[in-house]
Structures are given as structure tokens and as C-alpha cells.
Amino acid sequence: MKRDLKSLANETFDLLVIGGGITGACIARDASLRGLKIALIERSDFANATSAHNSKLVHGGLRYLENFEFRLVRESLKERRIWQHIAPHLVRPLPFLLPIYGSGFRRRATLSAGLSLYDALAFDRKWLDDPDQRLPGHAWLDRLKALAHEPVLEAAGFDGAFLYYDAQMYSPERLTLECVIDADQQGASIANYVEAKSLLLRDGRVEGASVVDREGQSAFDVRAALTVLAMGPWSDIFLAKALGHQVSSRLIRSKGIHLLVPSATRRHALTVPTKSGHFFVLPWRGHTLIGTTDSEYDGAPDDLSVSEGDIRDFLDLVNSSLPAVRIGREDVEFFYAGLRPLIDDGSRNTYKASRKSELVDHGLKDGAKALYSVIGGKWTTSRALAEKAVTAVARALGRPVGACSTAKRTLPGAKFGHFSEFIASSVLLAGNASKNLAHIYGSRLAEMIASAAHRTDRLEPLGAHGDICAQIVFAAREEMAHTLSDALLRRTGVAQFGPPPTPAITKAADIMAAELKWSDERRQREIADLAPVFKVREAA
Image (cartoon, rainbow, N blue to C red; front, side):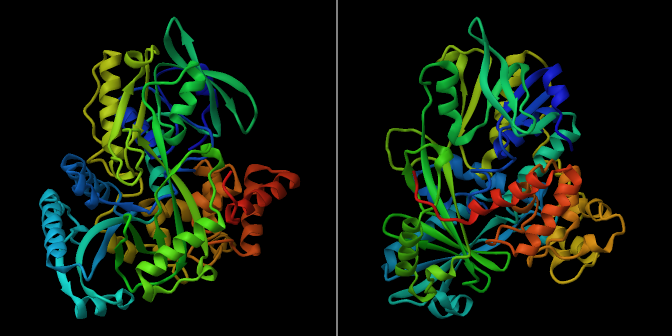
């Protein structure tokens, strides 16, 4: 997969997708599979922002039942099963415990009813070939049984816990990338580090965008019959600038931070209720991911950061709600913040605001024909949102297209049978590398290993979490990685557990420099650019 700047600059497309997060990737994948001529551009790297900085869950949204959003929950549960089917190496079942503390019979009965409805709405949760992927229904565990599973639940008034199931992503960045790879394999013209600066407007109609290649600094136009914005928290800001006025569909931005700490549970995730909402304690790759906060964010999306105050306040909430966990600031190995782009319903309450999505036709609402944007939504339902968007686009083009196939067509790395059998038959490497690489690449693993070209040094570990040097080669050659951060944060997991050891950074930078013909100055700059990821900053 290579950046296709020549095609972007010289051809006219049916559809230009601006934004390479999970929504844009799903739209490009769906549209290209239906036979449309697609361009996809992303100003940074794929899944660089909201699509990466989340709780790594594919879930039905149990709490949305409180707002009677039954349709959204059903859609989410259906999409959860679809992701398990099309990407079984990257989306796996995860058991949750929802503890009850001194709430009495009424609270327990209410939750039991809600979980029963959740199970009923997930009537298709066992419609999967792999028995390991089929999710059981919920169950009640009394105090002793619950503590036997997770002693960290111990606290005054603990009555027991409900056991239920959702699913977890091994890597949201890799899952997004596989959607991009599938679109590329169907002929889409794709490039990261290409930024849309303005829209091409003529007689009230959008005909594409004027863009800049941030790698080479060249400017050119990408022309298309229709344009779809999938820019997440940046959508309304970009539109207001491009059209010269505020648009009809406004967003509110919800900031959520996550903390990575040493393993705090045995194997279950925890859904911990608080006075203002809830947070998750999630086992992930031998560590625990704690998230998320939910507060309205009024700053510029580019200025989003995590402050010491954010971390302190969140730890106070975690320790007061789950006292046995006893997590200190010194335990925080990594942290990140993300923005949820929520449809502004006027409530100004980001926690209670709906996670519904919307496809906006700006020809009808803002006088910009042939321009659409997708706003709101959640990770889990991004494929379904893309299906609706592409169906609408095809209708607007007035052309017959094929039926949507993205719910049944497995992603490029999922060309295997049952995942447990695939792992057992995968290339054997030292330590935990085999299992990690099987998750990351799935059936593309052999192709990645082949990039080592029989060089044993390329099979050596890179960092301490199951990555190897050959992945950096493969990322640069085949996966459109153009910076050291691309390779260490999004193509691999080397930098997802806190600052990597200096030798790992140096080795990866040397490989990238050789593959991409960097000067020593560029190599040093790439190393320096990685450092801010791990620094706490006060929000602007």
C-alpha cells in the first residue's frame, strides 16, 4: 500500500473522503467494494486521533438503555457481532463484572432487567462459527463468587456483581488500518499526510478539495463528483472555515482520558458505577486500562492534552470508587486523551448526550451541493454508518452500485478459520511475540515475516511487548508508515505502554531511516517528535 498522489492529483473521483479515522476508512472500504471510484485523504496518519484514543471496546452500550435508545443498542450489538466476524484476530470477547454496593433489592432488580433486555437485543450474539467468539448471557454472582473472580472488588457494602460480556479490540489502530488496506486492494486512491485546506466550490456545488501534501509540501486539487467529510471533532470547524459561515449541524466535544497501569484484575473487566456516571477497568495486553472521563471540551481539538490535574482527579475517583485497587501516580505508565464528537442536542451534558450518528446533506442545509458530512456515532457502529453514507452517495450519483458486502466480507488479516487454531499454527518466535503478531496481522503474518528476508536480526525483539524489528520494515514498505510515531504507536505497539527503551527507539529509527532514505537530521527529528507523546501538558 503506497500513497497514491499521482492519481489523487490527476483523476476525477466519484467520491472524495476527507478523514482517515475509522469512519472514513469504513466509507472508503464500502464504496470501493461497491464499485465506486474513491479517493481517501488524511491530514495526519490513519487512526491518529479519536479512533485510537478510546477504551478499545466494541460494545453494545448497556447504559444507553437508561435513555431508552433501544434502536442504538440493537444496532451496536449487531455491529459488535459483525466486527467479531470480519476481524476475529482483532476483536475478541471480554467478560465484565458490574459490582453492586449496598444498593438494595431495587437497584439489583433494575440492573437485572436491563441486562436481560441487553441479552434479548443481542439475540444474534452466538451466530458465529468460532465457538470462542460466542458470548454467553449475563449471570448474578454473589459476594463470595464475585470476590473469588476479582478480589479488587472488596469494599464496604459489596453485595455481589453481575457478569456480562462485550468485546475488546486488540488494537483500534490496526483495525482501522485493515479497513484502509481493503479499500486500497479494491482500487481506492489513498494517502495519509495530505491535508484538505479548502473546498472547491463552483456555483454552490462542491467539486472536491484543494490539498497540500505535508510530506513533500506540494499543493494540488482532488476533484470528485461528491465529497464526504469524516473529520470527527474537526468537522464543523473545517466546514465553517471552508464555507465562510457556521453550518447547521453543530458538535459538542467530550474529552475522555485513559490511564494505563500494571495489571489490577485477574481476567475480568469492571464496570464501576460512580455518582456522575461510570468508568471501566479493562485488562489489556497484560496491563490495565482505566477509562474514561467525560467532560465538555471547548478548546481547539489540536490543543487537546492530559494534565497532571486530569490524572490526579481521575485517580481520586478511581480510588474512592474502588478502594482496594490503590493506584498511585507512580503506577501510571501511559496516558492519552481523546475527543468524542457528539451531536449537539442542546443538553450540554456530554455523558448523557446520545451517541447516535447523522449523515448531513449540506446541499439541503447549508447551500453546498454535493457535500456531506458524517457526525456523531461511536466506534462500534462506524461500519453501519458507512453503509448508510455510501447508499446515500450512490443515490445522489444516480448510479446503480453493488450491494453492501462489508458485514460479511472478512478483513485482509482474517483469512483463517478459528483463531485459536490459527495461533497454534502460526510462526513460532521467542516469548510472547507469536501471539502478539498473530493478533496484529492475522493471516498477513507470513507476509510480514517474509519482509525480514531471512535476516535473523529482523526477527529480534523490539521493546518488551512482543514486537519485532521486521514490523518496522513492513510498516514502511507496505503499510504507509511515514514517521517514527506511525511505526511505533500505530503499526506496532512498541510505544503504547509508555516511553520505549532508548535502544528500541534507536533501532526502529535506524530501520525507518534506511527504508525511507532519511537524512540524519530527519532521523533525529523523528526521535525528538516522539517524546511529547509521553509528556503531561496543561491544556491550552
